[in-house]
Length: 385
Image (cartoon, rainbow, N blue to C red; front, top):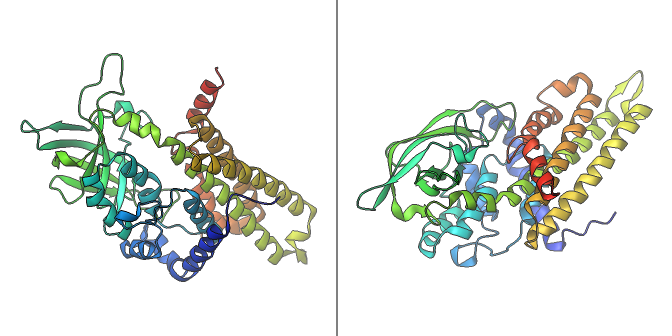
């Protein structure tokens, strides 16, 4: 079926990204895997390519293109090559929407030029040890000083992608006690300078997958955050977090579809090259049937992901639709990657093969951005159940 979601400009960008990956990522990727993160200077190369500034207004050094399609193309191309751009996906995909929607003019002038150039890498800190998806139960506090000049930040966060390299972190903290009838009240967003006294990066977490993405624990001990670094209005942070969830969940859905497509590509190449009993693995009926079934699932996931992408760009993607796309596409990726690994036999269990890394990377799709169970709750509620 003809795909209509991307035009000639998008395909030109795709070729640029593909060439960049071949020149700047693939030759070094094994080193990144061993180090457990992409190097900091790699983000400057991404910035030079223009990837950080596509959606940033021109007055702050960006291209001013209000579309998520370029990020989607990047997702497809990194999956196709079996690589990752480290924690930079959070910088653009998660943090930028908050800055564009909530920052005032003065804040945008201070933060966005560095955002575009890679001089100021951003991360976002929501999850805390012991709270998981229950963001309303967070215990990190930010108390406004008596003179109103700064907040005193205390607490801890975990699972913070990009937390090692970040120069600024959007920290969710409780600035007021919750109300009796509203646990979500009292949370605010602070854009914290990581060089401030009392701010520290703890362990870089050793994850099952996503090995080149630096994921860290953060702690705050009496960190004095200037009051002018409050993002949006005080005590309304929870509602702000909810506004960006459809895009965040679409990004995960798109990544999952792209991973599934890449898995089929890797498996097809492997079975055509690998021989057993004197003939290519691809010649066996079981191989053909397995890959055909996987391709059918990938086709369906692509259609769902593309439809959701169009809806997002049109400003029409609902929370339930995003949840449905995430639930479906991550399920497809889980099944397809497992079947494609099986076709690799024992080599599918060896990390030097990209299918093995995909298998490990994929598992978190059904956890972060909201678990499968949370997605089902959102969809069921939208159904009136």
